[in-house]
Length: 330
Length: 262
Image (cartoon, rainbow over all chains, first blue to last red; front, side, top):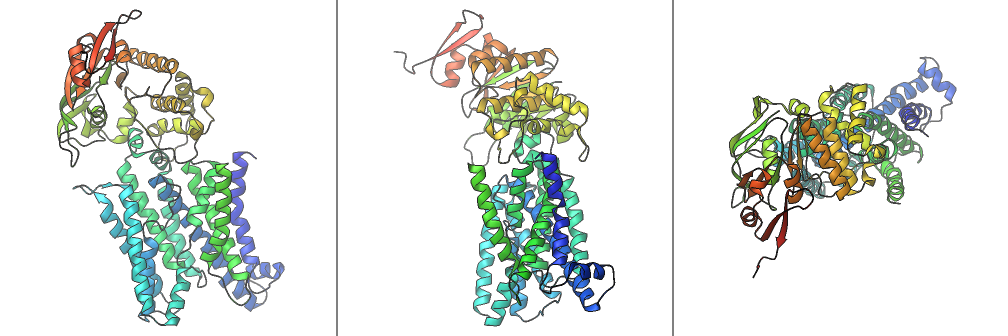
C-alpha cells in the first residue's frame, strides 16, 4: 500500500467512527430508524437518543480525541521523546485536584459547570507552575525542556499526593465519584460541549499546524533548528502552551483519558513518517476516531453500565502499542 | 559575505574560567578558514557565539553588512548555514525530508515546496555524494552517511556563509576528501567557509588561514605556515610535536610525539 493510500484510508477513519458511533449504543435501534431520526422524523424518543445523546457524544469524542493526539504529537516533537504524552507536564494532576476539591466540598452536582471549571483552573495552575519553574535565565525567555519534563513529573506527583489526602478525608461516595471522573467519561456530552470543544480545539490545532515545519526542525535538535531559521524559543513557548491548553480543556470536559496522545502519534509515525505537516492533521483525525470507537466499546460492552473510557483506551491502546513496539524493534 | 567577531567572551554559569576570552576572528567573503584547538579550547563556543546561539558576555559580531542582533533567525538562515556537531534523530524520517529542512527558511509557513526547492535538495545530495541515500530512513544511516546528509542539508540552504563543526569527524578518508574538495569548491564560488576541525594536516592543506585556540584565547592566527609551528602546536596541545612538509602536497604535516622526548 502506498503512503498516499494509507494517508487517505486513515483520514477516512473518523467517518467510519461517526457511523458506528451513531448506529451502536446501549439501546438497540435499527439503522433505518437512526437515519429517519437524523432526518428529523420517526419516533421522538428515538430522535432524542440519536440526535441529543449519541450524535453529540460521538462528535465530542472526535474533537477531544483529536485534540489529545495532536497535543501528544506536539509534546513528543518538542521534547524529542516518543514517550511524551499530553499529561506529562502535570496537567492531569492539576485538573484532578480541581475536580476533587469541588466534589469533596459538595459544591458540584452531575452535569453542572462547576466541576469542569474547577478542573480547568487546576490544570492552568499546573501549567503556570511548571512553566515558571522551567523558564531559566534572567530574561525568562529560555525554556529548558529537560527541566520542564522533570518539573512536570514532580508537580504531577505532588498533585497526586494532594488528591490522595483529600480522598482519604472524604466519604466513600465522593471517592467513587472522584475516581470515576479521573478515569474519564463522555457521559455528560451535549451540543453545548461539542460547540465549546470545537471552538477552542480547531483554532489551537490550526496554530500548531502553521508551525509544523518548525516542529520538524526542533525534533532534530534546538541548535540545528536555530541554524535552519526557526525562532526556537518562540515556537517552543507557543506550542507547549497551546498543547497544554488543549489538554487542560479536554481534561476539564471528560476527565483523564490516557493513551490516545501516546499511541496515536506513535502509530502514525510508523505508518506515514514523522513530517508534522501530515502527522498533526492525521493525529487529529485518527485520535478522534480512536476515542469515538473506544467510547462505543465503553457504552455497549456491559449492559446497564458504562466502563470508564480511560479504561477502554488503555485496554485497546496498550496491546496495540506493545505490538508496534515489538514490530519496530524486530 | 563576511563574518567577523570582535573581543568575543563567553562565560558559562559556574565555570571557573571563560570558555572564550577576547577572541577576534575575521573571515572575508569567499575565504576558507579553519579553527583548530584541543578539546575544550572554545571552538564550538566560538561557532555558537558567531551564530547568535550562545549569548556572549562581551564582544560583537557582524555578518555581512549588519550586526548579528539585526538579523532574524529566518533571515540569517537564508544566508548562513551551519552544521552542529551532533543532533537527535528520535523519529523516523527520510533523508530527503531531513535535507528538505534546508529549504524551510526560504518557504512560507504554509507554502508547499516549489520545484526549485526539490531541485536544491537533489543537487545538494548529489554534491555530497549522497543522492542514492535520498529515500533511506535517517535512522538506518551510518555515522559517515549521516554526516554527509547533514552537510547536504546546509548546502540546500544555498548559503553565502557555511560554518561546520567537525564535519569530517566520522568520515572515511575518501569521503573526507570529497567533503573538503566540496568546501574548497564552495569557497571558490564565493561562499565563506569556516571549518572547525581536529584534523591538523587537512586544515594545513585546505584552509587559507587558521585560527588556533588555546584555553579560550587566540593561540595563533595566520596562514597554515605561520600557525603550524612546533612552538604554537606544542603550547596548545601540550605534547611533543614535529612539523615537516608533506612529501606529496608540500603543506605542513604534524606528528605528535611522546610528552617527554628525552
